[in-house]
Image (cartoon, rainbow, N blue to C red; front, side, top):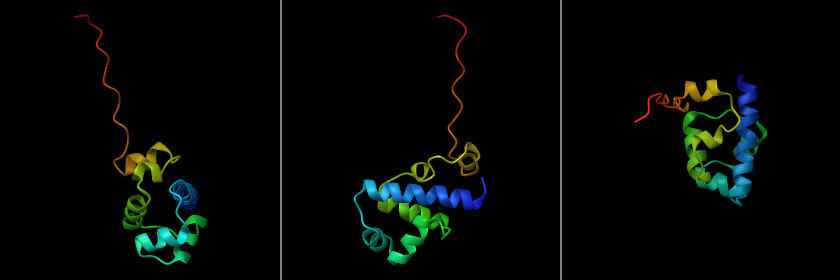
Length: 95
């Protein structure tokens, strides 16, 4: 997944999570220590966030990093070590 696509995905997830939390952009900005314009730019997908920013957003919005990246392809989760483990093999013998 290319960076602009990932930025747009994160932007939409931040917007949706903030709306679910019933927070204004100003509230989120205050919680993180940003100004409102920064939140606006993140939600527009025009400001790339760092890993530290992602952690701060997750804490302020009470979501997981997995939720922040909802909709990203599996390779994004694998790169971050967040891939789901493979299912355990089924036993073929009966007890």
